[in-house]
Image (cartoon, rainbow, N blue to C red; front, side, top):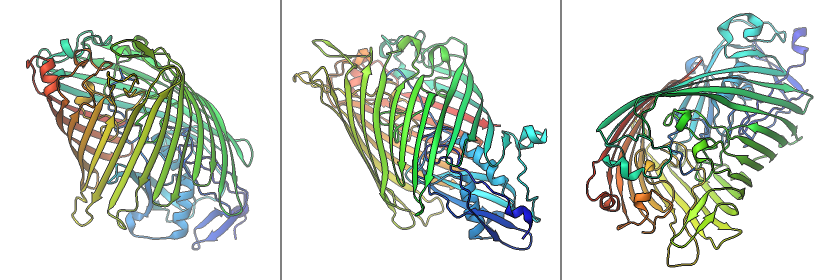
Length: 609
C-alpha cells in the first residue's frame, strides 16, 4: 500500500439544516483496483435534521419565494457514475459521505455547492455535479453525477480552490482542505412580471390603507416591470478539534425594480447586508453509529419551520428594498438558534426579530421551541410552541384593538411520505392553535393534504388535494378568533395560496381548496397546474383589506394557475408562471360589480456563478 494512503484523511460535513461538521480519526483504506484507493471512516455518523447554517430555515409581505428550491425538504439522494454505466457501492458511499446531504433535510444551494467541492477532492473523481428534481409531494430528489478519473490522483492532502490554483476553475470554492472551507457566493435573480387587471381593476379600493401602495398597478390595464438582484458573500468553516467546528457567513444584496410594479411605479435601488452570522457545532458519533450534537448560531440568518404555514418569511421585500416578487431577502434581523440532535430527532430553541420594512415594522420578536423527528422511515412528526414577547402589531375588532404582544402558538405536524415505488399515496397534516396571555383569544389553523402518483406514464403525474382553514373572528362571541398569519409564506406550492388571490386574501379568515398536479414532462421540466377555490370562514373580516372588512358573502373567488420550471442545472433555473383569477361574490359586491378578472404572467431566472 502506498505510504501516502496512511496519511490521516478527514471527511467532514458542512452545516446545513440537516448536516453538521463531523471529524473522525479512524480510517479504513479500501483498494478498488490498482489505480484507485478510497479512504473511508469506520465511524461515520448518520445525519439527521438540524440547523441551517449555510441556508437554513407579515401580513404586508407579498412574495413568491424560493423558486430555486431553497428550503425544500430533501426526499432522496442518489449517486450516478459515468452516466449510469457503472455501479460501485464503495465509491457511492464515499461520495455520499463527502457530499453530506441526506434525506429529511432542507435544501440549501450554497451549502450543496460547497460540499460538491469535497466530492471533487476524492481520489477517484475526475468531475462531479448534481441535479435536482421535485417529487410528487413537492420534496426534492438529488442526484450526484460523477465522472471517474481514468488514473489515480495524487494521494497527498493538497487543498483546492481559487486562492490555491490562482484560477477561476474552482469558483465558487476559494479554499478547501480536510479541515476548512472558504466559499464565495454570487447569485442573480431577475424577473419580468406583467399584470392585467391587477386587484381586479380596482387598486384604489383594494389597496386603500396600505402604506406601500403609493401608485398601485391595475387601474390602467396592463403593467409590466423588471426586477433584479445580486447577492455576493463569503462563507467559511473551520475545524477547531475532532468534535468542534466554527462557522461564519456574510453577504450583501443589491436589488432594483424598474417600471410600474404592484404597489408603485417608482424606479428604485437598494443595497444592504443580508447574511451576517457566526456559530459553532459540537458533534459526537456513538459506537453504534448514532449522532449527538449541539449547535449555536447568532446573527442575520434565514429561518423557517417546516413548510412555512407559520414561520417562513424572516425578511420582507418590496417597498424601498424593491424586488417585491422575486423576493431575494430572507434573513432575519436577529436570530439566536440553539439546537440539540439525538439521532433522527432534533429540538431547536429560537428567538428572532424579523427584518421588516421600515413602513410596516411591527417590532415583533418571536421565541419558541420546535421538535421534528422520524418515528419510522415513512412517518415524520413535528411540534412547536411559540410566544411573542414584544410587538406593536394590532388586532382589530368592532369594539376595541388588541396587541399581538402576548400571543402564544401551539403547533402539531404529521407526514406520511413513503417511497412512491412502494406506496403511491402520501399524506400530510398540520394543526395549530393561537391563544394569548392578555386577552381571550382562540384562533385555529389546519390543513390536510392527500395525493397519489402514477408511476407508469412517462410524465409520472401526481395529483393532490389540500384543504386548509384559517379561522376568522365571530363578532358575536367575546373570544377573539381571527388567525394571525405571522410570517407564513414560501412558494405557490406552499403557503402563497393563489398567485394573484394571495395579494388580496392571505392566510387569515379563509378556507382554501387546492387541486394540484405535478407533471415531469421531460427530465429537466416540470409543470404544476393548480385550481383554487376560496371561501371566507367568517363574514366579519376586520384586519384584512379595508374594503373587505365586512363581507356580504363567503365566496372569495377562484383561481387557475400554472407554473413551469426548467432546471438546466442547480445553478441555472428558469421559472415561468401564469394565473387567471375571478373574484367571488364577496369581492364583486365590495367593488359594486365594477371589476375585471385578473391575469398575471412572470418569468424568473436564477443564476449562480
